[in-house]
Image (cartoon, rainbow, N blue to C red; front, side):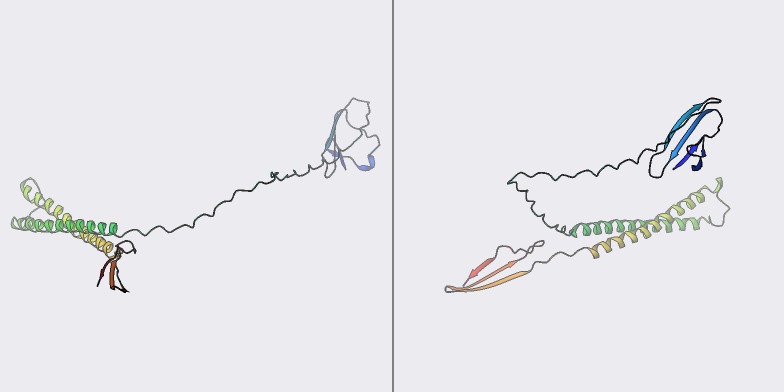
Length: 225
């Protein structure tokens, strides 16, 4: 145990002996490992004396763990039976008709852009011929006196942009449509089925074909000879 008076440790050899201290409020603190600290305040005037009995409280007793009580089951009670869950089935593969439709649409849009590029190229050549016929290339930069050359230069720049957008954009869109058509899942082909039966009355010939999306055969048509 460690005893402190006003923060100073008291030597164990001084326990039970009178020690001279300054008058006023005296703070006595005692500590012991594993136990809560003990503290007491004592006020002494000049010439007075006091005896302090130090008693460190015992360590707190740990609370026992909570008791777990199993639920009571009434006699004859049968727990409900949970039916087994069905295994997850894979979702059916998407049909390739939507991808083929997108492929055709992409091809049509791409052809339209290519046509726009062709028209822009033709107009560009006609405007370029007029530009060269007016000798606009040898003239000074456009001004008020050469307004027609300025308009031709602006038109040539616009037509050049249109033709390149049509050629490049149309080519990319057509290529995208072709890739979609080539990678689209193929349709299931109908598989013909033929059956032959022999009976006392003659021979029976039956044939049936599978549908496009299902492997189940259609009602057979039979002929007897």
